[in-house]
Image (cartoon, rainbow, N blue to C red; front, side):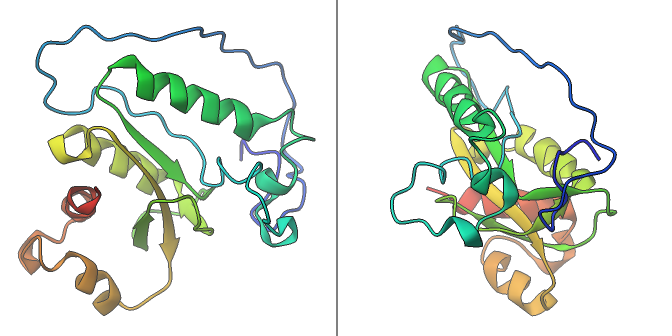
Amino acid sequence: MFSKFEFNGKLNPTFVEGAFKLPLSSIRAYLKEPISPRFIPVGSAGITRPDRAGLDLSKQPPAVRLNKELDFILTFKLKGEDLIQESGIPYTIVRPCALTEEPAGANLIFDQGDNITGKISREEVAQICVAALESPYASGKTFEVTARLMSLNCVLCAVVRHMSLKNMRKGKACYAFLMTFS
């Protein structure tokens, strides 16, 4: 794993610390007619929580609890998102919860407002990014995503108004969720 912390909050024994820099001062787009997102950064769920008033940090994931100790990584990710949103580039920002090496196939929950926690496989995040590239409804959206153990009926309740059961492939399900965000 590439994360400093495991999902359970313990240090990742295989993590190797190294210097990382991404100096950006601005990003601009000069497109006449964008139809779908052209830029899909993958951020982090919890990105807006370190400065949220009244938040019980003991109930938050490690990156939120330890933002200061991690050299304000979430703070800088949020600044990066702000630059992208102001750039004019058609974007979709995907904020997954804790990343795992598990195979894709879990039930997914999409949300906005930066309140969900959980975990999701890297493979599923990649599939979501590809689905967002194909959807003009995803452009200009920011959302969080996690995997949950829940019945298929719960997932169907969320997407049935947008699609038929025969199209319940993972990419199509992502597309349906993306369409519903305002």
